Structures are given as C-alpha cells and as structure tokens.
Image (cartoon, rainbow over all chains, first blue to last red):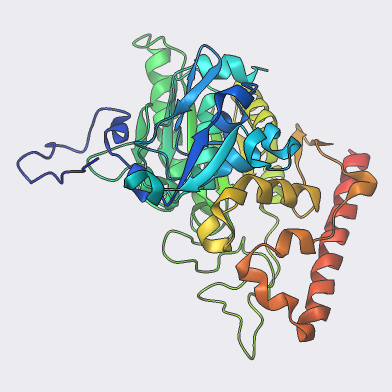
Length: 107
Length: 308
C-alpha cells in the first residue's frame, strides 16, 4: 500500500485527464478502526454499501462480499447504519459488521 | 424509483480513493446524486471541499466529464456548456442525450456563487444545481458563511467571553431559489438516499433549471464522531431544523412531517462540538431562542405547504 509521488516527467502534459483515476490512490492506510464483515449475520440489505463515502464495500450480484481495505478509511458509518447491528443492539456475536482496532491487524 | 439492488448494478460514477475525511458527507452527496443518473452527465464544480478532495492532481474521483473553473462561477460554467450543447444539437452535429449538473458548497452557492447561480437560473438553462450545505467554509478552515446556523462556533465567529458563536441567523437560501420561479426546487438531507435519488431523477427529467439543496453533516467542522454522519443528517430532519420538501412550479410539498414525534433541537446540537458552549448554564436563554426559531420556521413551513 505505497503511494509513490510522480516526478515532473511522469505527470500528464495538459489539464485534461482520464476519468476515475483516484481509485489507483490507496487511502486504506488512513484507517485506525477496521470494519470486519460477518457474512453469517448479513441480510444483504445494502444499506452499508449505499452510505459508504469511500465506495469500499464490495457488492456482487446484490450480495455484500466484504471490504475493499485498500480504500476504506474506517469511519464506521457501515457499522452504525447496519440494521442488524441496531436490532441486536451492537451485541458483538450477532452483529453483521464490527469495528476492531486496526493495530491488531498490522502485527 | 430504483431499488438498492438495481443501483448496485450500475457502475460507480464517483470512485473511491478521493481524499475526503473518513465519514465525509460531501462524498456521499456526490455519490447519491450520480447514482440517480445514467452516467451521461457533465459535472461542473465550484471550488470547495468536494472539488479539492476529489480532484487532487493527477487523480480524479469523477467517472464522468468534470469541469472546475473558479469559486463563484460553477453555475455560469455549466450554463455555457449547456448552451454549447444545445447549439451543437440544433446544428445536428451531436445527438446524444446529456444532462448537466453543477455542484457547489454553501460558500460557493449562498455567498460567492449567488449571482452566477441566479443568472443561470433566470436564463432558464436545462441544468441541475446541487448545493451541499455543511454550514461553513470547511475547506479553508471552518470560517462562517451565511449558511452557518446561529450559535455555531467557527474560526471567524468564535465562542468566547463576549460572543457565543455566530450571532446572526442562517439565510433561507431555498426560498431565494423558489423566488426565481423555476420548475423544481427541493431540500434534501444526507442519510435519506431514497429521497435524494428520487429528487435528482425528478429534477433531471424536468426541462429547465432545477435546484436541490442538500444538508450535509461535516465531521470535521461540526466535531462529531465520523460514524455518525448519517445519524446527524437524520437528526436535522427529525428535529425540523432542516425541513425536507420540494417545490414544483410554486407548489410546496412536505416530504417529511414528524407531527407529534418532533424531537427537541438539543438532540441535534448535543453531539456537535461547535455547539458545546451552548450547553453551559449561562447560555440557556440562547438555547431556548434557537428552539423558538426552529419552531417558528417549522410553523411557517407548514402554513406555506397548506396555502399552496
């Protein structure tokens, strides 16, 4: 997850550029909290996907597949908006999304 | 209206990797607005948070044609592009259906971009202007704007011994746009994707200038937990601080009415550190005044909806 800065020789010539290139820039290392997806509890309502400001929830054929940890900034909107989490009142074993300390994954 | 499963099949027109804060509301606004389109849109953006964090050279988060010109002229820029498109179409040199959307923050819309926006709306260009209103100049360091609510602590209207944050009321900007007699004006909020995407679809289906004012919580300037962005938007709606309505050809229609479940304004103010000073014992009268203002505005809103 390294973002190499471009030198003046590599930078594009004019102000017109191709679209949607920011996805090449990884923002995952901003994260201090990591959302963890528990597939067995998910009902695939896609509320987390629609509310994510960083388009970091991977959806395939209408089903949540997990997280794009290269871009997720760990804001935690997904966990706080998840209707399952609200229903089980954030009881850890029954949640569909839990937030964990990012440090534990960096060891 | 499309369901979430249908929306998820569309390509992302606003991609990840932008440099917005964790839990940024402006990114959610951009995503939801573009989600409601078919991708055949040209976007112009006023200077502001959204423009700065989404287009850091040499990257861009926009998967659609995007123009940034200056702070004050997003509406003028997009109206020029639209006029060019209409001309090419009349000359039969171009035949694709294209929609035009301009984004501006509250600084670029309420204050700096007002005359360009007013002009574009009056000339009747076929365009949609989306204002993401977060209530201050968040990009440059949280300076007060005319959208900043009364009592909010900002860097240019700080809360201290003499003043308790901004002393003036915020401007009712949506009413100014209604006064332009354009076909469609609406107010929406971050957190209600169904309402916002429906409004965008409706606005784009109407020929002529349209305007949507989206209330957008800003985790940096407001000072709340990043995970609560959606909740804050919802609270603004539920406390009636930000009425959610639409005006079609001068006819007001309320989209959300809590009736007797209207929450006290303190529920919206409490999680935000910019209103921290209002909860001191000596500022109680100010807090009551803010509640009174909200109630008054809400009653006025109900009356207007009834009258039209």
